[in-house]
Length: 80
Image (tube, rainbow, N blue to C red):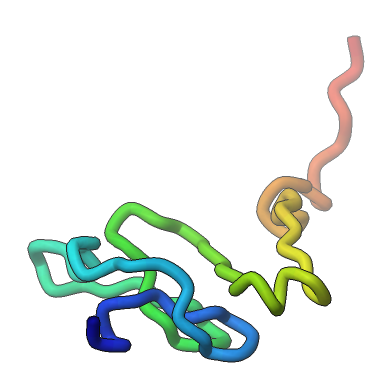
């Protein structure tokens, strides 16, 4: 199978999983992609990272709240 039919590892670029049937472009032609690697993300995915077997031995993927969006710094706590 062609290399373009696989999603690549975000660290080394090695093929990770078969994605030939995954939709990457929405009906209006918009495409979402990883801002660092520029790998496309499937329609409906807000963020995604993929590690191959080898890179997973030395790297990790962490999911954490987006502090900039989840914390309001200009509001005061409500008094009860």
